[in-house]
Each structure stands twice: as structure tokens, then as C-alpha cells.
Length: 311
View 1: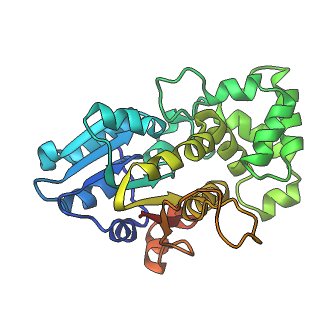
View 2: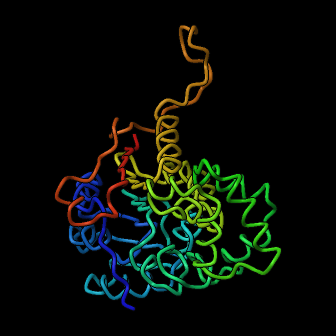
């Protein structure tokens, strides 16, 4: 199956990045290279672009797509939590812009064998990086009922989290839950029928929760944002596209903290804590997909773009 993915908020992201022709830019979630290609088109021969992704299929597809830009492009297989180490290894300390698209690619969702989709029957996998040992199957079959409840409640924001966790544990006592369809069946039995009929797919939130836990998505995001902002040159920008409220909350909070890091009590006449602003939030409200994009790409409907500029 060919790696295909429609880049969300493509023009809005490239415009917000304000690309300098001779600058250095990073797409830390490279995917199929959609955002990357548009950034590279704005670069001169002196410009440089680094693409990072942990998915082997994405690396292969993006390398082909960006090959016409020659030596301007460096593609690295890695998780973006290692961005500092990886960039220093290729002689880069500071950059002029960073893009993060935190969505699961269409390829990953549509390739049944990857086990991301609740709509396709496949082994429970969900690994972004297939070099990783643990899979979704391991989480479903080895986590305690309390831990399953926690991740489905916190990462899936599902009000039936307690009942879903209980049903998973009951079912796996009979036999291991090995496929997406088996897990679907368990979830269906844990959610009242009237809710199943009225709402969306009953498995959506649980699958999201397991994927986030397995790939440490929120942990990596929260742990790397400050470092990425610190790597920006003055005037450099970081553009982040999120797809659910948990990610958006982390990005919004980090941007605000970097803009106004002062910890002094509000009644202090002057700041004495010594914390200095790293820049400014460009997007007071997130940029959302337009009507045309929503019509052509249903997966863009929950996307939000936030932008921060280094001072």
C-alpha cells in the first residue's frame, strides 16, 4: 500500500511559518512530506530542511517526494523527542522554523496491518515506530483494570471508561484479546445500546487512548516543547497542528508560559523572579480548517493550528 496522506492546514501552516529562503527548517513529524514539500519550495540553494519521523513507511515516501530538492534536504528516522541530539549530529544548533503535525496519517489508519483503525480487522498493533517492542495488544492484555480505566478516562475522555476497562479484563480472562475486532466487540458490550446508536463509533475514544499511551504521545509533546522553542533563532516560529483537546491544551499552556514565564504574585509592582519571555503567541485563537478543506478532507475537522514566535 502506497503512503498517502492529505496534509491538513497546509497553506495556513506554510504562511504562518514565514519561510526565509536561506533559513533552516524542521518538520519533526514528516509523514508523507506534504508540509515539507511546500516549505522546501520556498527555500533557496542556501536553505536547509530536516525531516524527522519514526515511521519507516513515512521516511521512504517523504524521501522520494523530496528528492528533487537534493542536498538541501536531510531525512532522519527518529522520534522528535530526540530532536536536539539528532540536529546537533548533522551540525545544527539553531533553526528558523519547526512544524509538528500531531495527527495519525491516512496511511497508518488505512493500512489494516498497522492496527490503528477500529474500522478494519487486524492484529492490535498501533506502533508509530515498528522497531518498538510493546504493542497495543500488550497494553490491552497486561495493564491492570485500574490502569486501563485511567488511560481510557484521561486519554480517551470516555465517560464509560470504568465499564470498558472492566469488560476488557473480564474478556481477557477467557482468552487473549488479539485483534481490533475482538476489542471492538468488548467495547460494544460495555456501552449502553442507546448511546451506541446515538453517538459515533463506540471504539473511537478507547482506540485513541491506547494509541496515545503506547506511543507516549502526550508525554513526548509536553517534554519536548520547551526544548524546541529554545532551538529557534530570533524571529523563528514553531507551528503545531493538534487533533484533540489534550494535545491542544498542552500546546496552548506551553506557549503561554514561554510568553509570560513570570511567577511573581500579581500584587508585586515589579518582576523579581528573573524569568524572561522567550517570545510571543501569534495565534490568540487557533487557526481552523476552512469550509473547502472540511468538505474535501473529513479528517481535518478537529485540527487546530497554534503558532509561537521566538524573540
